[in-house]
Amino acid sequence: MLTETQLTQIFPLAGQRAGLFIDPLNAAMAHWQIDHPKRMAAFLAQIGHESGQLRYVRELGSDAYLARYDTGALAQRLGNTPQADGDGQLYRGRGLIQVTGRNNYQACSRALFGDERLLAQPQLLEQPRWACESAAWFWQSRGLNALADQGEFNRITRHINGGLNGLDERLKLWARAREVLC
Image (cartoon, helix red, strand yellow):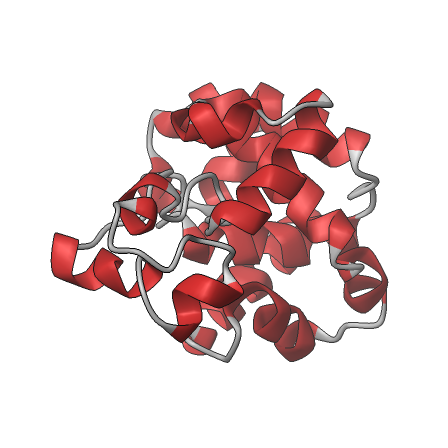
């Protein structure tokens, strides 16, 4: 079980937001078997980077930036409609791991709720409970516990980000999390 003090040691920029997230984070990690220090440290490092240390649960970006999710090859891969109809804005990254695109929202919704409510209410992933649950679901659904057990941090990053963007910060957060938890 992660304490609020440990969470603020790992995420010093989180400030008071750590208190909002500690209980839902512990519940989500327990539910999705992120249940020992190696897994927790890798998970926390990744969500720490993706959320700006719990400060952001919705992807930042201008309309022009988010338009890349609305039309074209990336939009299609994410399951968004091919028309310029606002899917890019609607299904922008949300939650602590930034669930992105209609396909991911649909799969996440089925896993968390047993229905497709996130397609109509994607902003639910901005609430602490669902921000944490969606991140832990994503982690588990991609088999990242096994990679964390093996110390395959770069492979985890690729699964989450598609590349190694922000690797230096992720590695610093991982080192801090291991220091605090291990």
